[in-house]
Image 1 (cartoon, rainbow, N blue to C red):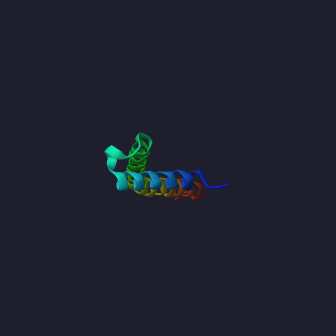
Image 2 (cartoon, helix red, strand yellow; image 1 turned 30 degrees about the vertical axis):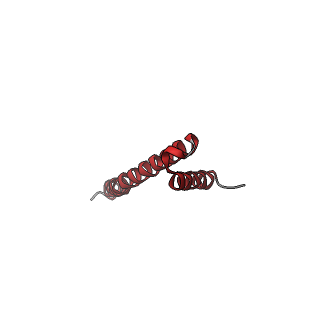
Image 3 (cartoon, rainbow, N blue to C red; image 1 turned 120 degrees about the horizontal axis):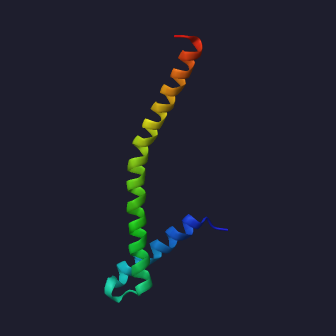
Amino acid sequence: MENPGDLFNSMVKEAMEEVGNHGWRDASQNAVTLAAFGMLVNKIDKRISRIAKPAWIIALSAVGTAIFFVVSKILGL
């Protein structure tokens, strides 16, 4: 069975090709809607990854600080 993400991406790619070949006025309404939705999902994914990278750095720094605090309290530093 195909990965659902791959299926969605292939459907969006086909819809974009149809819209590209026929133009948005002559393409089917389903193809235009799917192509627009695919572009929106792509844009959202890029924004999430742009936010997630600094969030991981902040989270790892906080975890490192917490571990240092606990170890220093245990060792009495």
